[in-house]
Amino acid sequence: QVQLAESGGGLVQPGGSLRLSCAASGFRSSFSSYPMSWYYQATGKDRELVARITTDGSDTDYADSVKGRFIISRDNVKNMVYLQMNSLKPEDTAVYYCNVGWSIATHSWGQGTQVTVSA
Image 1 (cartoon, rainbow, N blue to C red):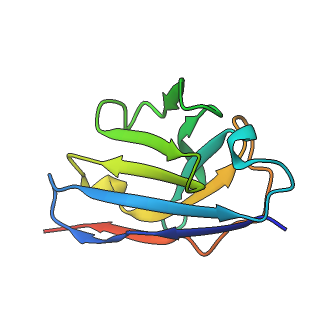
Image 2 (image 1 turned 90 degrees about the horizontal axis):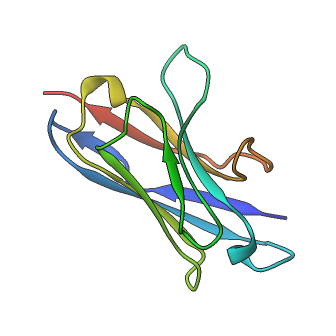
């Protein structure tokens, strides 16, 4: 069973940066066989796709709201996915989750990591 564990969230001031990590385990095939994505869910709103990355990291895609500020990356040796978040805004405040897949989330959600952007 695939397990996803997000970490790295916290409280940060507007304009600040955070780096989120996602540790993935339990894949039947190699982790490098799976595209990965980050999602966020603000209070009272639906979960939304933030960023996604192909199996080898050669291609990435971002929600318009984070383009130019967030960078998704992965380490296929360590089975990790990262989200570097720069120039954070209050509207980035949400619980952030990682999942497997490019277009849809294909596995159970982890606990997520809370990001709060506030002065």
